[in-house]
Image (cartoon, rainbow, N blue to C red; front, side):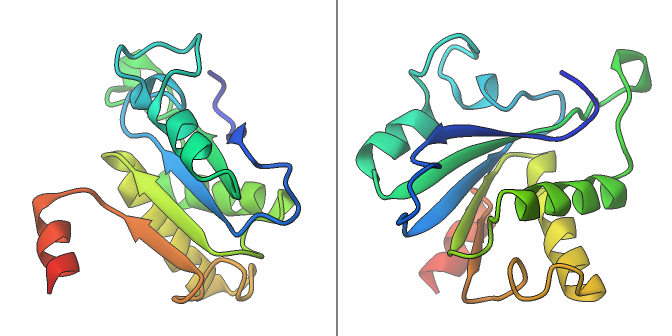
Length: 151
C-alpha cells in the first residue's frame, strides 16, 4: 500500500440518492480490506463492510486506506495531523459530508478520525461538511463507548 490515502468504494457509493455514508478506518499495521475480513483476506468481498452494504443498500460503504506502521523499520507513517488533513481533503474530493457520516474505526483509526474532526472544526477549511455534530457519528467500539451509549 502506498503512503497516500485512498478511499475504497465497497458498496452503494455511486448511488446519488443514498441516505448517508459509512467509512471504515483501520488501525496500526492494518489494511483497508483485510482488517474487516474474518480471515484477514483482501481478495474477496466476504467481509463486514460488504455485509453491511447488502443490508443497507441505500447507504454508501467505504474503507479508508492509509499506511500506518507501529515501527519505523516496518515502513513509513505520516504524522497524524498531516494524515488527518489529507484524509479530509480526500473525503471532500468525493463530496463526502453532504450526507450523514458514520465512522467505524479500529485502533489508530479512531485516533485518526478524532484528529480529522478536530482539524475540520479548528481550521474550518471543510466548513460544516465534516464537522457538524448532527452530521457525523464516530463509532469507537469499546467497553467505555458501550457505557456512554447506554447512558
